[in-house]
Amino acid sequence: MQIAIHHTSDSFSDHWIEYCKKNNINYKIVNAFDNDIICQLKDCDALMWHHHHGHFKDVLAARKILFALEHAGVKVFPDFKTGWHFDDKVAQKYILEAIDAPLVPSYVFYDRKEAEDWAKQTTYPKVFKLKGGAGAANVKLIKSRAEAFKVIGKSFGKGFSQFDRMGNLSDRYKKFRSGSGSLLLVLKGVARLFIPTDFAKQQSPERGYVYFQEFIPDNNHDTRVVVIGGQKAAAEKRYVRKNDFRASGSGSFSYDNIDTNAVKISFEVSKRLGLQAVAFDFVLDEEGKPLIVELSYGFGARGISEAPGYWDSQLNWHADRFNPQQWMIENIINSLEPADVSRQSVD
Ligand SMILES: Nc1ncnc2c1ncn2[C@@H]1O[C@H](COP(=O)(O)OP(=O)(O)O)[C@@H](O)[C@H]1O
Ligand SMILES: [Mg+2]
Image 1 (tube, rainbow, N blue to C red):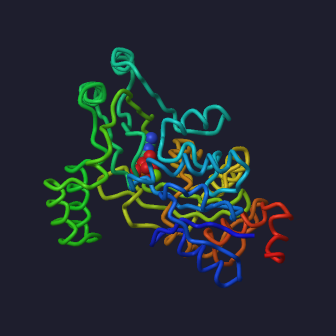
Image 2 (image 1 turned 45 degrees about the horizontal axis):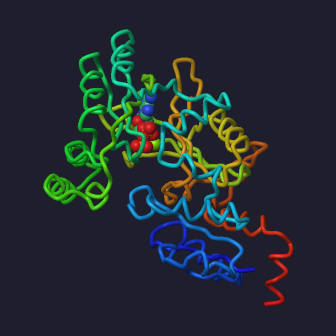
Image 3 (image 1 turned 90 degrees about the vertical axis):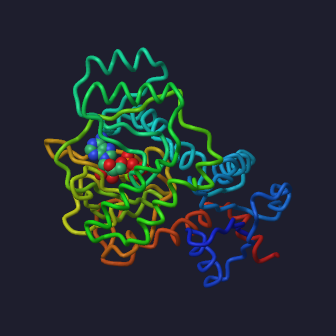
């Protein structure tokens, strides 16, 4: 048995490699961008790659390579079911609606007139989002029809950059004012007004669609639930920024008083969709019912790994360490055919 790992520092792969070393698992570090990558993987039984939505080359290539291998019978992480809707909130709307999961009511339009007709007769506020992005960077409250028309016009006009320079600076400034960010970060935000990120330079503008969600009011936090292999889940509450409705990226969180209904729904959806790994974000509606805001196979693992324990799929609590990356690789190894595993001893 041999596991191929595409390594990026400060990602899941640090832990996968550590796990292989510690447990004498045969592994091979690969550069998935090599032209002959498929050939290089001929002696491997699996490929694991923590691809990132903010790395342009990953966005361009990762899923093609992973899905091609999966199609040919190689085990991969993330696999198709886990990864096809990654960083695409519109895709997530369709898949969650298709299985009747409790998603925040969401609306997408591919036609300017249809979007405007809807905007004329709907209520406000609504939440406008680009399909991609994280840390609440591309999420905005729309308070009136006029504001809705403005974003609709831009969506079907010149489009939105994936990187909102003014939004980024204003977020950094607010964090600085509230004591949770440094002046250096604000200054870097100012520099970013003039020097776009590599990603923003390469990625074409977001346009040709517009996406809104119902605004779910009175949430001072969201609930992030991470489920690995449909078997183990940990959760954290993330508090919203001051005078803001957005939690992700705020940097302020707690592990107390987690809504176990959100955990239960997370297990159900994760199993129903066959997800190897997933992070769900929930808000609570007026009746306290958890609604999914988005889901993602990739997530920042540092905070969640400090959780005081985790639930199993029977919702029993285990006061042990939550080890998402370790369980990802263990699940891949366990999914290999016995023949693949026994090859290890022959090799
Ligand atoms: N429809 C909504 N109603 C109320 N709050 C929301 C809604 N959608 C998102 N939020 C808040 O905004 C934050 C960012 O939204 P999210 O869709 O998770 O984007 P990102 O991918 O940037 O994390 C969430 O963490 C949540 O606190
Ligand atoms: Mg989020």
